[in-house]
Image (cartoon, rainbow, N blue to C red):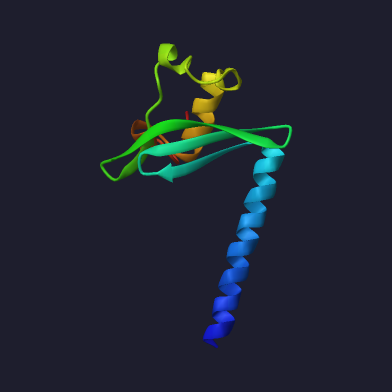
Length: 108
């Protein structure tokens, strides 16, 4: 019985990874938590993933990205210069602390 549960668990994990792989390749970008202090934002260019590291921290129990200001952002490579799009994508996965309270609230 336990062996069957372990096999089902392994298959579920494997299928989840396959699903993420195809999802990321289809959309052409991905956001991943690297550690409690860093996030990787990656984009796919001709089958090769390029990434930038975005600082993050756990603030009062919330994992939150800290984005560079516009001037410091220029240190990132040319492909990563669309700051508003990258910030929007990252905050979809890791909302800013002041946005978490707005989740589920209807805009009237």
